[in-house]
Length: 115
Image 1 (cartoon, helix red, strand yellow):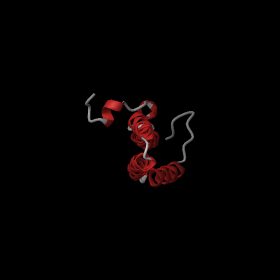
Image 2: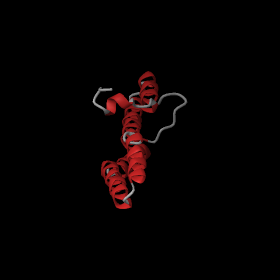
Image 3: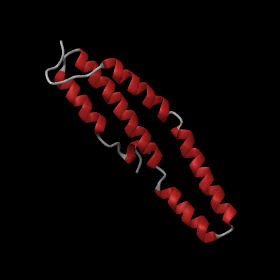
Image 4: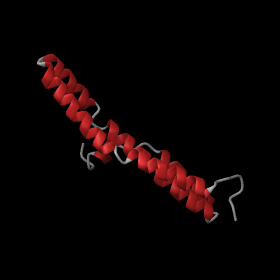
């Protein structure tokens, strides 16, 4: 029994989620490589100003890639939960799963709860 007004193709959702997971898996490595490249560029510049600017940029964006990864992971999980709820005809749970999936992660979650 399907939920009225919903039209979800579970196999299509599974395929999209699988492709998304494959695409985001290397993000941790990208973040590390980016940080190392910024450090190396600052050092190679031989300029204290460039080093400071790149260090400031790196510090400012320290959580950008982890936030993208976390938000994408939340969306993948939420889409899977919403699809499973849809298959069980549980509209309330499907709506809640969708709503929770698009909620922005908090920086505190990335810091292990520390400010």
